[in-house]
Length: 256
Image (cartoon, rainbow, N blue to C red; front, top):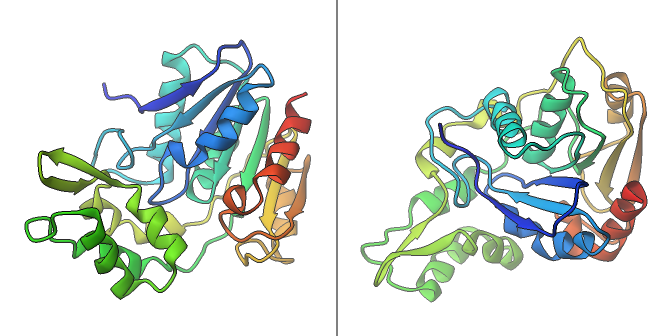
């Protein structure tokens, strides 16, 4: 049975699970995780399936992603963790919480709501899928290729973190592009349930992001009645990168 790869920082009987977003990996949260571990918390930076160093599989939807999380917690004997989920990872965390897993102590959802979204990764996936590692031999060539598709240098650098040396002189992607490019409907799907999650929940919204808007608060409170939305100033969708100190303070207040 395959299990999720993780980078575990610190030792404690208090556990914080961090779930990254689409096309990311656990180590995207490494600097935040190190700071939180200094509070006496064991931080688990998880790679979700088809991402990072975790296993590849043709199934990719929020049900199986939530099941992967459950298996990880059982395997590592983790009870009542705090779970942070960013973007896609936030929907995984919501799905897991609403499936009756009240074993979660507290929940932090980062810049995503339960609603259905419009898929906006077409160009990025096209750029990644068109990388020809027979012709492309170094990271500079990868960067130049991606810049031809994507006019945001920060996103290009974010995607470059998925590169690794498969063998001497041979680059490859950690991402399972073949599966991920066909998961559009699953990725944007709404998280809904007849259940509610009663434990304390915080939704963090990037000030300059449109992933959470005024119309989402009613939907959020219906599923997470013990929740509040906090706007992170001077930040976009990757608010833990744009304003890490603010995010770390919010997490610290929730833990202590």
